[in-house]
Length: 162
Image (tube, rainbow, N blue to C red):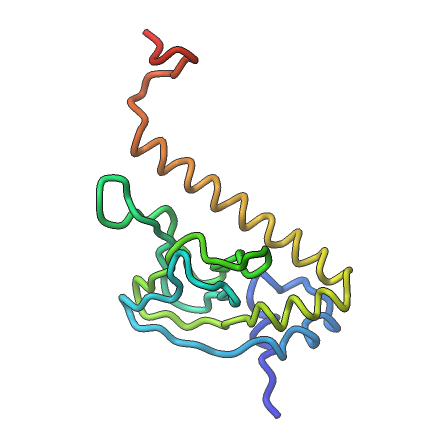
C-alpha cells in the first residue's frame, strides 16, 4: 500500500511533525490537481478539507465591494490553503482559485478532527500551526483593506484627521 507520508514530510507545514503523527494523519491525505482557473473552494460552502500546495499558485479571494472579485492573498508551493475545516460551522470564508495549474495534497478535515479528538496533543499542535495561518490571512486582508479604503490620512474618532 502506498502512503503519502513522505510527501507530507516534505511539505514545510508538516516538516517538523513527529513521525508517529505523520503516520497517523497520512491516511487523511490524497493527491489532487487543479487546472488554471479552477475553483478549489467557494466562500460559504462546506469546508471539510484544506490543501497543502505542492506546485502552482492559488488566489485567496472574496467579493469586492466595488464588484467582481478581490484577491487578498496568493499562495505558492509550500503553503497551506484553508483553516475553516477546524472550526464549526465548517464553512469556507474565502474562495480559492488556481491561478496556475496546481498540485496539492487535500487533507480530509473530518478525518483529522476525529484524530485530534482522539489525541488532544495532536489537536493542540495543529491548532498552533493553523493559528499562524489565520494570522497571516488576517494581515493580508488588513493590507487589502488599506489599499481599498485608505487615503493616506490618519483616521480620528470623529472622522478624517486634518
